[in-house]
Amino acid sequence: MPYQTSRIVSEYPYATALKETFLMRQDRMEWFQQHPRRTRNAFIMFCVSGYAKVQRNMESFDFKQNMEWTLLPDSVIQILEPSEDFLVCYCVCPPPLFDEVTLHLPSAFLDYISEAEPYPLATDQEQKANRCTFGMMQVVYDDTGNTHRHQIIVNIIQCFYMAFYDKMRDYIGERKKSYTSAGDRLVKRFWQLLLVHYCEHRSVRWYASQLCISERHLSQTFRTLLNTTPKQAIDDYMVLEIKIELRSTHDTVQQIADKLNFSDQSVLGRFFKSKTGISPLEYRRQISSNRTF
Image (cartoon, rainbow, N blue to C red; front, top):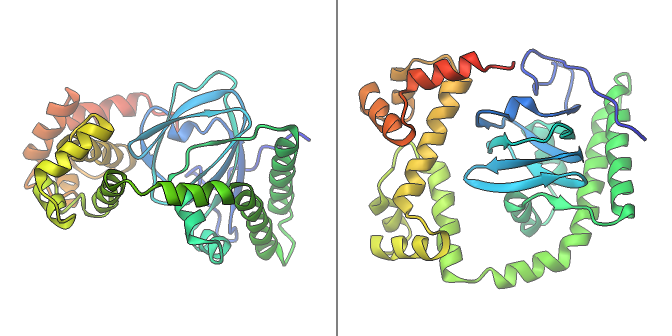
């Protein structure tokens, strides 16, 4: 059964209308191409055809035909190198709806979803079941007069995740057991801290103190596991946040500097140019000339 392309309900391509609690779409997700953006909602996605490189926060993955993937709210996402036939069907869930869907799911499964790469559906049965689920989501989305529409979509997505959890239960259990390396736990905790405190704290010393280790220990762990340094990780993430602000807002460079806790716009400008080779205004001019929405 082919998917139907859903209506665009807002000038912002992934915003729901006032009476909508979710959104169904099928397209190339151009909004996330060319420049990184931060998600406002959760995205439950199925790659119908083609392939692309995708970057979530600071991780890169392949997203190919017959793969499913969930992006959580407040993720930084960019789609790179999409093939000409790249096409994705997806359900957009605002945070209240996604919270309702996942309320009773095991915490270990939610942790897995938050970190998982796109999952390949290897068998015809899995692919058929996935297409059936997204087809039902589309039917419910189009049935705007149904007074039970909200509860129906919650039930469908819950069934989708319960079936997925049943497939992944043994793997998640083994993953939880094997994810015991002190270095892995350290890096994971570092990223959790960075995603919360990047505006206030950008020194390796602060993160090391929060982790109750020395700066040297943290740096050695990063070099061993990631072939980079915690300072480089902090700087790379700050560049990403600046790009998002320049791309997604009309704020001045000074306003962005204030928001991201730089002392003034010249400090932000020097930092950004040292990492990218161009000034913030030059970057904004480039993205304005290439804007597709």
